[in-house]
Image (cartoon, rainbow, N blue to C red; front, side, top):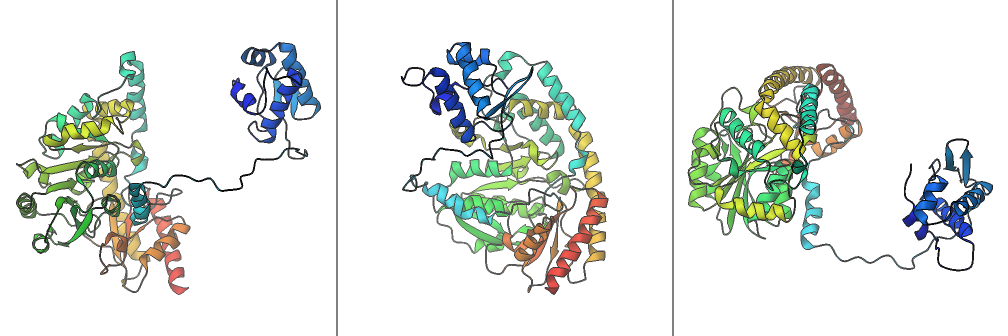
Length: 496
């Protein structure tokens, strides 16, 4: 590795100007200091003598003498025809002292906003990084068309122009925004101008944008109860006053909204296609009623359509955005659940009135998503690969869902039943009220099985107990194996 070491050696004592020791002694001592402090580790290859001499502005003979000292003192060893390498110094008696600080370093206090985010991060549901079964919201990761995506990526780099590598459109590439507009027109019956579409990393990014755009401290945000825990964390971190409203068989309850006395109402957050986590689908009648209520109370609606393709495929209902005639709805969607979460790509449709303000916020903070990912996604839509992928994914999701439910009910007793309402990428199993679902999910997670506690989705004390689980991210054999392990862990926990 031909690293330029000037800065490292100077910071560890080398100086070509100060008197006293010879240059080769000072050079060898700076190497020794760096090795003792593990800045240069065992096996690291030192630069060739000619190259280091050139970099440091020294004669080659000075560097050769320094390397000879390092070899004599066993800090470095030489390999014929290869070079010089840092030795194992664990058995050497190191004669140097570290600088000690009598007082702990004092830092400025973090902002009030950062304090809020730190305090509310515990509200979020986050899965274990070591496993994907049965994390809610994951698509069938094993059916993603890797070669197709790789081919499109190779095409991008093959046809790239130098100008394409400059700063790009802040709100997203026009080609992707136009293709998303066409995609939404066909798949979700949504009509919008592509200029309203903002490319984001996913649902939480969209919520952060809207929150920064509209929410001041103590502004009121109406949410469903239970609700998406990560959205709740964002609103609370922005110091909004969160107002829970009930869910009935048609979705967010308007009658419970009528009982709310608003002072600083700003937003209504809803997941109408597949209420998260109950799975209730908001009726067409209720969607129209919600629009009327929002208009009457001068509030904006956030329509989080996070898994529309899975929950609205068979019998689609027009989105709230599609029914809106007064530009009162922010519509957010994501490709993370259609393709895979690591792609980090979604979109937000904003009412025209707010687009310029969002652009100004982007230009001073996030800027834009990687143009490579955007262009490949645009081509993926344009070449109709997304249609092919969707049909395959939906088939696999439905097959794995049926298999999961069948296996689950065979392994667990009648007191723990899968709820039938859910249509998307997660299922919920209700637990008896005397069980602690938060504790159970921790025990399962320690055993490599991910689920989320249903009680964490509620805002008030009347919390119901259950497990929210994904079912589609792994194959049937893995589902069977993991569910058997899950049942053993669950019943061992009950008996303990």
